[in-house]
Structures are given as structure tokens and as C-alpha cells.
Amino acid sequence: MDGGGMMIRLIDVVLILLFGFISISEVSDRSDIPLPTSKLAPVQPPAQEEIIIVGITEKGEYRLRNGRLLLDSTRKLDIYLTRLAEKAKAAGGNFRVRVRPHKDTPIRYTMRVAAICDKLHIPKGIDVRKIDE
Figure: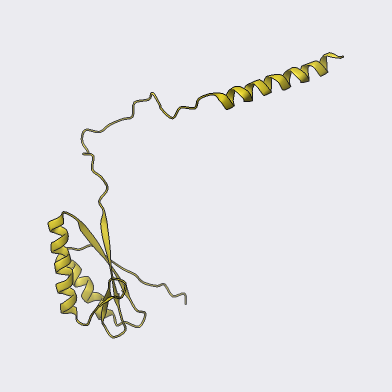
């Protein structure tokens, strides 16, 4: 047998042993590196915010709770959002409002919802659809 054939056989044996040791070795997730800490920023869990979706129909009616609640006036919506804000404040939570007007809804109804949110200091977002011309 020549020396080249024996060398290939030894490489095969070494690779088999290497993969054998890798497969039976214990893999540890622990790290001995101490992570940096901050004394300035207090540790707080992320704020859980509820999102209230206010749908607006073409007629200016407001749909909430996935369409199960229909409010026919801005005054009723104002009362509803005021109560929600009071409950959230008492519970120590907060919420956001997403305004989703129908594509044929006059802008005044959307702006009324925005004004109510501003008055109550509720963060808001208005969903719009971009139309390519």
C-alpha cells in the first residue's frame, strides 16, 4: 500500500472521531460574560396598549367593537371615548384610537374624531388609502 492511501484513511478516521465528539459534547447556552446594566433607566415591562378602532360609515355613523356597536352622533362617540379614557386612567393603562373612514366618508367626520382624541389626549392614527394616479 502506498503512503497516499494510508493518509486518506487517517483523515477519514480523524473526521469521524471529530464529528463523533461534536455530536456527543454538551452544548451550553450559558455565558460567563456579564451583561452591561444601567442605573439610570428603570426596568419596566413594555406598556400594553389597547387599540380602539373607530370605523366611520358614509353617513357619518361610528362603528366600534368590530361593528357590534353603532353610534349615530359625534356626541355619543365623545361620551364613549371619555368613559374609556376614565376607565383606562383608573386602571393605570392607556389606549390608542385608529380611525378608519369609508372611502366615501366626508372628511368632517374624520376630523371630529381627531378633535375628540385631541381633547381627551388620546393618541390617534388615521388610516388612509393611497390612490395611484
